[in-house]
Length: 432
Image (tube, rainbow, N blue to C red):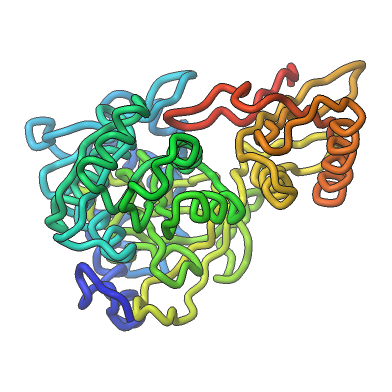
C-alpha cells in the first residue's frame, strides 16, 4: 500500500462512506433551500422539499444543475452565504456567454487544498518534495488548487504559473523540482523541449500531476518515456471547486473520487435516469461540503464509467475512468460519434507527435474531417511519395478506429501552435 494524506478518510469502509454522504446530502440540500432562492424554486418546480431527502437513496429526486443555470444566475445568484463570508472567487475560462463564477469560504478553500494534497501524496509526494506548479494562476482554478495542496503536504512550492518555458526549465533544473503539475499538452511540450535542449539528465522530476483537459494513455506513456517520470491524472471542474475532485493512485486504474466531499453518479444523458456503476454514461456530481457555492447534481457532460471494486492501493473511494470525451464536445461527423481522444490514440500508436489539430467542415452538404499531424524530426522526409505513403497508412488506421474517412496532412515539426494552457484541438467550421 502507498502513502496517504488522510488515511482514515481515504480508507473508510464503503458503508461508512455512504452513511457520511447521506448525512451531508441532507445538510447541503437544506442549506441551499434556505439560502439560494434559485435552488428553492428549482426544487419546488420538481415537487421536492428538504423533507423528502433522507439519505443517498433520495438523490434521484433532486433536479439537475447545468452550466446554463450557473450562467443564468451570474454573478452571485447561487451564492449560499452572505458575500462577506466569501474570501475568494475563481472563474471558468469560457470564451462565449457569461462566465461561471465560483465563490469560496476559507473552509471551502481548506477542504479543496486537502483534496489536492491527497492527490500529491498519492503521486508519491511528501514534505521533502519540490512541486513545480505550471497551471495558470489567477481566475483559473488549476494553479491555486495544486498550490494549496502542495502547501498542505509541506512541500516546497514553485508557483510558476503557465508559460515562459525557458524559465520553467531553468527553475526545474536549478531548484531540482521533483513533481510537475500542469496540463498534459503543456507537459508534452515541456518534455519535448527538455529532450531537445539536452536537459534530460539534468532534471530530477519523478512524477507529474496532469489535468484540465482530455488526454490518452498513449500521450501519458509518451510523456513518461521522454522525461522518465510517472504521470498521474487529476480531475476537477471550476463549477465543483477545481482540481482534486478525483485523482489517480499508484495503481492508475481510475481516479479515486473524494467521496467525503462529492457524490458521483452516472446518468443516461438522454433519459436522465441513474445508471448502475460499471455502465458508461454522463458523470454527475454533488458538492457535499462547499458552503459558499455548492452545486447539486451538476451535469459535467463528461462521459465515463464508475467502478466501486476495491483498489489494491487501499483507498476505498469509488474510482472514475478517464473520461472518454464529453457529451457536448463530442463531434458527430457523417453520423458517427467522434472524440478527439480516439484520434490521439491512433496518432501516438503510429509513432506520431501528440501535437495535432482536427478541422471539421461541411462541403456541399457533406461533413469533412481533416487532421493536421506534425512529423517528428526523425520522420521528416523530402520524399513526397514517402509522405503520401505515411498519410495513407494513418488514414487507414483512423478509418479502422472511427469507421469514417479522415483526410490526413503531415506537416513540419513545430508548425502547429503550441499551447501553454489548454490545447485547442478541434476547429469546427460547420454552421450547424
